[in-house]
Image 1 (tube, rainbow over the protein chains, first blue to last red):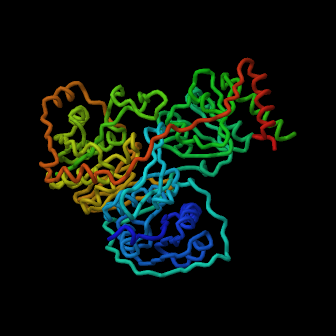
Image 2: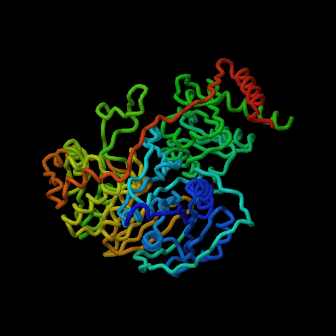
Image 3: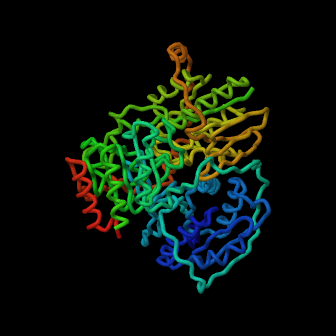
Amino acid sequence: MGVEEFKGVWVFSENYELAYQLLGKGREIADKLKVELVVVSLGAGAVERGKVLIARGADKVYAAEDPALKTFQVETYTDALAGLILQHKPEMVIIGGSRKGKELAPRIATRLKVGCIPGATAVELDEDKRQLVATRVLYGGNLFSVESCVLKPQIVSVLPRSYEPLPPDGGRRGEVVEVKVQVNPSPTTLLEVKPKEKGTVKLEDADIIVSLGRGVKKPEDIAMIKALAEALGGQLGCSRPIAADYRWLPEEHWVGLSGRTVKPKVYVACGISGQIQHLAGMRDSKKILVINKDREAPFFKACDYGIVGDIYEVVPKLTVAVKGLIKG
Amino acid sequence: MTKIAVCVKQVPDLAELKFEKDRPTVVAKEVPRKISDFDKNALEEAVRIKEKQGGEVTAITIGPPEARDALKEALAIGADKAVLLNDPAFERLDSIMTASVLSSAIKKLEGFDIILCGEASIDGYSAQVGPSLAEWLGIPQITYAKGVKVEGGKVVVERSLEDIIEVVEAKTPLLITVVREINEPRYPSLMMIKKAGKKEIAEFNAAALGLDPEPLKTSGFRLQILRAEAPSMERKKVIFEGDAAEAVQKLVQTLQADKVVGG
């Protein structure tokens, strides 16, 4: 198969919100390359989704509603996608880097015997080389590695929220093509789906996050941080020890490399030293405010505003001041 | 008897990471190395399965001779056998080719019911070796396991996704990747460490695995690393010190002036 035969930009995510985000970036890349932007839609309702995907930027939708694809299972989805890729030969395939997407992308790449850049936070196009240039984070957020694929199709998984979706445009023209795919029966059986034991926290959606770290001495004191979060109209976050070691807060509050990746408008860190693993989860916040009694805490080198002081003294005062501000 | 393979990677301890001055390059030699965190969870889970219902655990790693330390630790934790895959051709493999080399070893050693991996390594964090290995072996995978139950030839896994838990059943042979919350890895006793020191570590190079080293050297990396960059942390760094009440007042004024809060 000659390299010149590969043409077009493809997007796939089993999570449609994520697919919309990738279509935003995919549109830009496809326009520069003057090729079609194709999105693959699999599972129940895949055809019906086609219109929405076109409104979100796709030129063409390959939709397959094979009963074996009803719910995401990595082996059946690999069969379907690898089959379609082999048949149509896109030059780049951008896969949404949800947990499911991250297990799917390498499986497809292995079947096609090509490489795969995992968990990129950004993808750009090298127009001359017709190459995707992807950035990903290594060593717990200490290093950005900028990589490209040697072989085609180029496959990359892109982390959620790396790009904004385009606003839906009902006037956009596109084609929904219902396709048949060859899928082996799934070797695994999904017995049950349960929600994670949790409240309603969705840190990724929060505009303001107030996080606590080891500076908080006992679980009862979380109320003090929570009061500030509430005064600001924000959500409560935390560093690794609070969620993973002490288990004072459920995992859904955990910001960091192994926790959630957030980029709120304002991130307030109370009593968090600013270890690289934590910074990796909130580095892209618009404004960062740090309260810590240790002037040498690394977080002060990575903040917009800071107060050197005891959180037990500063946070309640700040809460009062913020309340006054919002009332006034 | 359940035959389990655990893939482990020796990684730099991120808490002790050092970088070359003004260059985004890790000073590898000065950084202590350890078994990657989630791989240790995978190892612990393998040993627990064995302890519950009998079996045999083989720890496998790709690495230089120094990676024997990781295997000794794996033996001390409870692995029965350890295998080092060491060849100059293995030095620069990307995750998909790493999985390919592992699959050759697993096929050679044969008969594994369960292959356990960590969700990802803490240094590269690609999370690709497990799924790719399953594909090379042509077996099903269940990733992000937070609980594993083995009943005969059947395995039931609770997997932890972003917002949901999926309970999935599969037959062996099966590949499972685990998340940190699955267990608390044990610290080996002195006696276990002593005993492990006497165990033999098998070693295979490319030829022993039936692999041609030359193409691995050239095509082992299907990704091209264009450059490495230090993350930029250009921030304002307006810091207030001294009296708390005053600092808060000044901060709030600044936040207002910069339109961060209060409209």
